Image: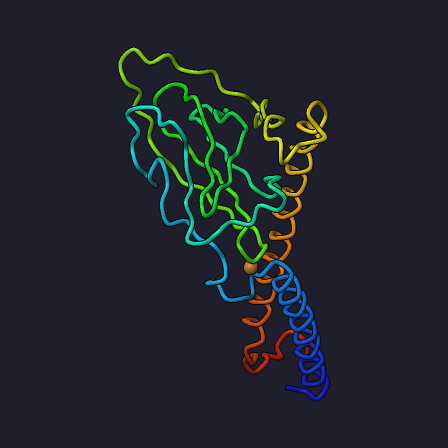
Length: 223
Ligand SMILES: [Cu+2]
């Protein structure tokens, strides 16, 4: 290769290294904010659930439940950062919008619709303050004589949150709606931030892969 080509190749590699370094730094910084770069063992993980992952329900449970390995962080009993959705085969939401966070467990109630494949979408706040979310499928095989409930196009807002006196002492009438709005907004924020970090990690990995020494340039195009 000519000297000019060699110089250009070196400059190119330097530029890639710089971009890769920046991307990696952004990913690490974002990851440490969200705890993604921290030890995975610090985060709560699901150890049991009703219904079970990929299980089949043949009768409506009193409550749907996610149980994790550690205490959940429910700051001020506000359920902030927690979400529990039961999505039907029609894409509608069947949970009642009310959450109960107790120790390592989160529960909600849902009246299911027609039989079929449902998805549980959940998000919890780990003991260390970081959110963890996941989803899983289960099959609803309704018993004879069951009257299917009607789903909601959007995740329902809990109608009775005001009865939780400790959490909503001063906000019986207006607190319910605004409280859930906050929660939905913070969910979106977490999901958005996680997505940005993920993009950063993917970019960094791609750039690092590209840093492999280039094969001797073939000069046929220029010289
Ligand atoms: Cu964490």
